[in-house]
Length: 203
Image (cartoon, rainbow, N blue to C red; front, side, top):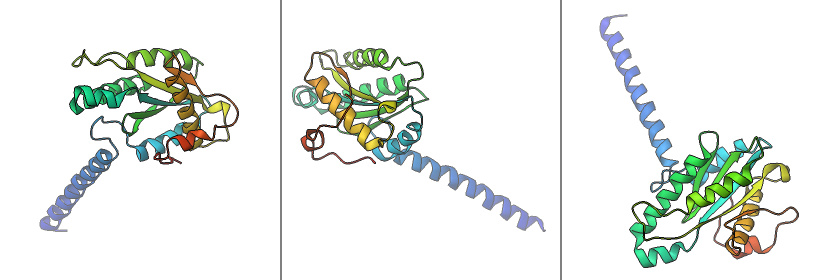
């Protein structure tokens, strides 16, 4: 093999490596929500299904209370800052062993593995953290309602069904003094899917 051919092979190999890295970054960026940096719905779904193989997994839904009021009163920039802060706090709480995503609007989801059975206490703390004012927006006061469900309580259900249960619990939390509610055992209420017809299935 002459030196020119060797140079061409090396150059092509280097170009392909650069292209591969570029494509990988593009794909990774496409899976991230552009505002918050959390996983998008589809990317979250793929990772959440993997985590749900663990019977200790917990599915969480979080929704910012009175978010429209924040936008109307303080402007969309304030609303965006609130979403970013909520996403950052949720991602930090979930850590590397879990996954957090933005499903759309002011709604977030997470799956974490609760090996020591302390999810209820952890999520009560998380709700308080999520409800703290944003440092740059001390005048904005709101809370974040959480609904959650244990994988082990419904071992035969898929991610979509578990999210519906967490959704039901979340809306129960919004109607109660507490901002955290665990999903009840038994059948899903028919009103869960009917109450929010715009929601897309995730499984």
